[in-house]
Length: 255
Image 1 (tube, one colour):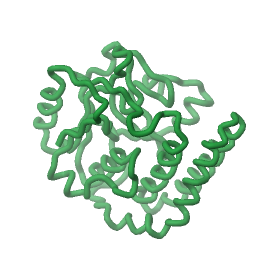
Image 2 (cartoon, helix red, strand yellow; image 1 turned 45 degrees about the horizontal axis):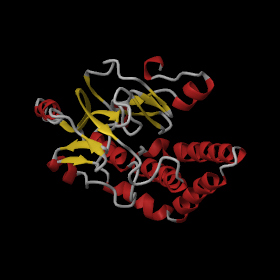
Image 3 (tube, rainbow, N blue to C red; image 1 turned 180 degrees about the horizontal axis):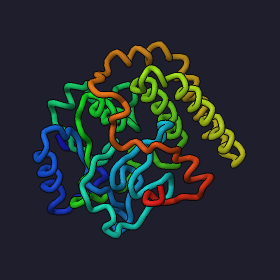
Image 4 (cartoon, rainbow, N blue to C red; image 1 turned 120 degrees about the vertical axis):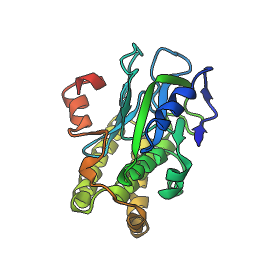
């Protein structure tokens, strides 16, 4: 399958390099090209950039995009490498692997569903890659605008569901408690900046998550765990929040 957002512009040779890379290794289940901005085609785009990563606390970022900091494409990410997740804006996935792990989680509605899928694919023993020799241009914000409280709600809620569903049992509760505390700090940051709707969105996400906790917890039984979590690729061993907001590191190469 090639799953392509309707706000993506494709060049003439966008598909062949990705297909060739996937066919070269049968263990590769999903892939993405570089995701560039539609308005400024020399800049990486927020939704995937040059391949997705996750830090030790479950926060996601990309080669070419750390939080709101976007890099200019200077061919620094033109290689093909394994990543933690591939962008849903232009998502290549082998149909057999997609069906094997249950496809996208219908509970998510929107946002982070490709990350959850890639996580389950890796746990099943598959690889996820970013192919730097291909690119597409993404407008972004066609489902929900970036500055939208509903998007904030979905991102926070879906992140918690994804952690509960996929994290190994021996670290699960530490992760949930830590993320809940950090989400509280995020909500207070929104409140101090007079973003009351975002403050409420974070708390609404937690209310819904904990209200349906039993439902989300049962999803753990659907996840195949063929390899140990420590073997997953694309996980940054540090904290991206600490490195970015405390240490001031803005670019992927600085991590």
